[in-house]
Image (cartoon, rainbow, N blue to C red; front, top):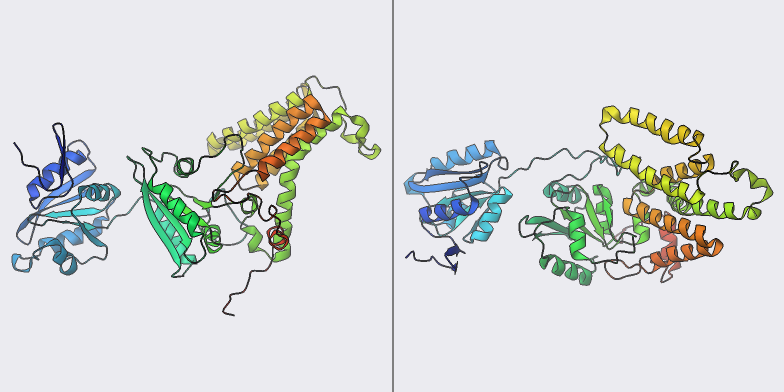
Length: 487
């Protein structure tokens, strides 16, 4: 019967080791079985001689820098037996010409390190293995994100590699107060999660609660990156569509939120940062507000507020006025529908709401070479021909075109769809109950916003509720940046 090594667990016929052995042969036998090296072509192991002792290195093909690995191998093979250190600790200090070197004897950490791209070296007779972090990941350049653009400012953006993203924030905040803590979540994926915050400005109660929730996540994998993490961390009411997080692909926006005391969550394999806690005023802010002088930034911010409200009110108000044409002033009689519609106005609005989303999905999945024909077909078939055939009224097409275009003035997709859902509810209630349905829908909209809470439990519309006039003014009006206390 085989004797279990130190720190083993037995379950039935299966024996699982917790710590490595000083025998290279035993370690290789266990690790080859654990990693399935005979089935996985990209997991490479090679037996070499280091200072007269047998050694074996493990790495994942594509994660290690080839030129660096060649230099390290050449250095290891040139070590003579007389210069060979007695243990892993001494070797890491004197015989490895590299910066990021660590040691461990725990199998769990070893397997995780190998699968993360770390070069692992076992040496016969050593009770610890050496972890050499020489990994590199396939990554695209830090170009400006397609969606989260700004008229002025930096043109770099987050990528799918979390180390690059932390470096982009570090580049902007050169303060010893900046903290970046790493966690892992997911039994299978072991996804890296980084919390970025300023230690002297963050709410430590909220931060501790956030860390505790990440450490107790019970999920197999974060398949959808940040959305999966958000659903694991915070359970929210499904019927309130207003977002609790702000997402950005801009490092300057993330750095600004960190300096304001927020926590920025970076997830490996995701090119965006998740900012929390977030109020409605945080969500509607954009980088262009601060890349222009205060008066221009204030105009852009107020325009965005007003246009967002108009996307909610335009079509329900038009439907209400068509039910009560006597409310329309004489000078605005031109907004009346000229011809009797073949399809009720409510169904026209609902069909166009669905058609607009269909065009968005088609645009996402359309190859670039076919985008122009798609635009022509959408303009002719869904525009002119649908009106001429009697399906839609020209006035309905005009207002829905405004709503579709105006929704893109809001950078946050979740907020745009929240307003869209509330607008559809308003249309239905207005059609059924008239003016009272319109008022009930507006009240429902206000209640949904005010009753919502941030992930830290604070008011979603602070500083409106509770009312703080000075803070509210700063939220609505772009003020000059505050001077440093040292000046």
